[in-house]
Length: 92
Image (cartoon, rainbow, N blue to C red; front, side, top):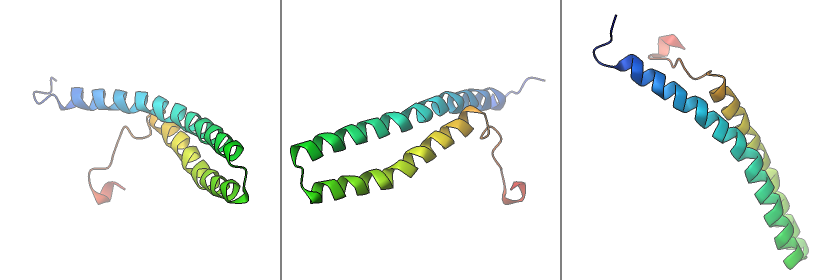
């Protein structure tokens, strides 16, 4: 049966977008970590005092779990875990 409202087509397109963005999120995590560590190394080399080292250590320690979470989120999006979203609280 053909869906006159085009809802099925919209859902299919949205699921494809979610899947491709999952790849983007998975790539973005390691790239962001790389640039954060590179920037930290450059800043510490430019001003090698304890304040700078502590500041960048805190930045990296706080940001690392966020980047890991981004990769995990991307993995689930790529595996279509978000393809069927609940429509009401009873669906949860």
